[in-house]
Length: 82
Image (cartoon, rainbow, N blue to C red):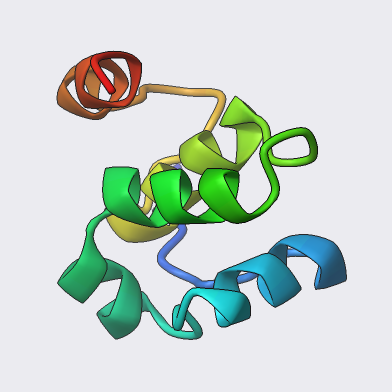
């Protein structure tokens, strides 16, 4: 059985709305801005509501790896260094 990678940009309505607020609606938008920057912008707009789950979901969308499998350690370090 071959492993499949997820390369979709699918978020629930609340997360999708928060991403739209910062100009992110597609994978190309996310690539242009970057995962950590997108997360930081969303967190700045909604500091109490946005959690690290959004960061992991953004990373998973961009890399095609499920958020709960293998996360990019560079992304983790960058997120926690801000």
